[in-house]
Length: 285
Image 1: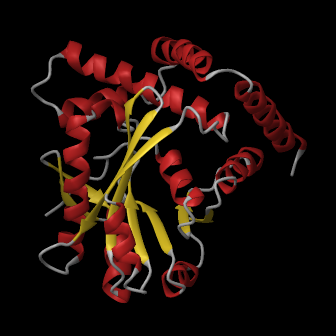
Image 2 (image 1 turned 180 degrees about the horizontal axis):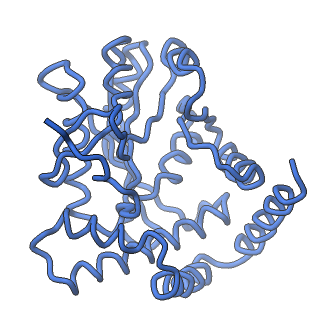
């Protein structure tokens, strides 16, 4: 690694150690101050987020849309700070699980499991729970351009006992995860450009990655949709549901879990990462 990347790594590690020494309430106060600065003074992707919220909730007033975005900044800043301070002390991290039997039953098929998730809720705690409970999860992640930052984040995730593979890796490696009867984790809620399949997301056609559907069609591995919701301060609920579409088509499968996500986003709009250009690619006839 270059000196710049090494410096990034040690700064992140030092910052994480400082945060780890603080109480969760102190980290919360720090995060809210940072969120306020980001919201008021760092405009990057802010307009994108506002436009996305308006598309999703056209009947909401400007004040309501603005409040959703403010809450979104607060939510993700706090949970990023919590991730920086990982591993957590188990005395304050309370996790309930809804749908564990669905997960266990899926694993009994001996074909591996396709775990579909999204940039929603506290996905790092979702991965943490799988790891500490000895579920063989291998998540597909986006590799950071900064090698120092990438090393830091990868080390944090490994502390939970999960492993990851990077996007654009050899596709056979991903199939091997399923062949080895493990859980393949896919985050499938970003714009997929022209390579995606268009499905309905908040009454708008959204280009969505086909990967989960194709893996299912080619291996018959069961699909589940999993997210981690924050329900109260330092209290979380992992929600796991089975994806069982009426038709075994790429479009129907993709629509099934996209609809499941939409239901949750409507209930917890501040926990969705609105900063992606979700509807960037337009459908053409």
